[in-house]
Every structure is written in structure tokens, then in C-alpha cells.
Amino acid sequence: MRPLTLTADPALQKVVQFHDLNDGRFAVDTVFDVERIVDENTAVRTSQPDGWKGREHLVASIPMPIYQALRMTWQALGLSTQEKQQALKRFLNDPDNAKFRTKAGRL
Image (cartoon, rainbow, N blue to C red; front, side, top):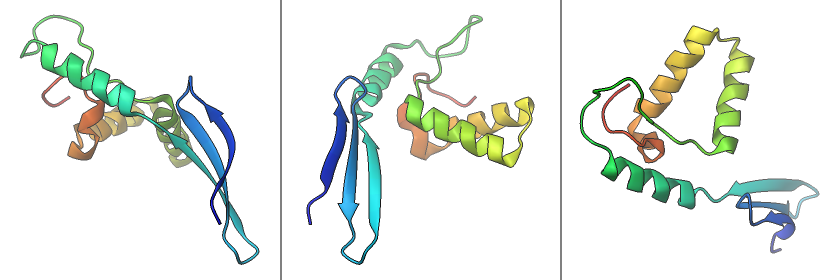
């Protein structure tokens, strides 16, 4: 059976779908399209000067649903503020998450 769309919010690029698993169970799936943020990050990253001179740098732009999931995980783990900062650095330095970086290099 095809999924049933429960809500679709073009402003948030969010779609919530209901899936019947055909065995008395069901699943609800929430999907966010982050392509616009990834494209914008790529454009910002390519226009950034090399190096870390200066006091302030925009280093990343993370979609809110991903950031909220990270925060919930850190809260469940009981991380301190310093541990959360280190966890965010690990997340941003991970090559799998490079698409969220707006500045080249390591944090």
C-alpha cells in the first residue's frame, strides 16, 4: 500500500506520511528536505576565504530537525555544556556531515 501523506509543509520542507505495514502495524515517517540548506552551505563554503584569521567565523548551518535530534541525544546522555560542545565539534568534523559545514578545516 502506498503511504498516506498526513501533512506537507512547503515552508519547512517537511512531509509526514503514514505507512500501513500490512501486518496490523503501522509507521509514521517524517521527512525533511535539507537540499536547500546543503546548497547554500556549499555556496558559502566556496566563497569563504582560507584560514582562520579574525575573531568570528560562520562554520556550519545545520537543519533544525537534525540539531534538535542532537540536543535530545545529548540531553538523554546527560552531557555537560562542555561535553555538548565537544560532541558538536565531533559531529561537524565527521566527513559524513561535511555538507553542513560552511568553513573548511577542523574545529
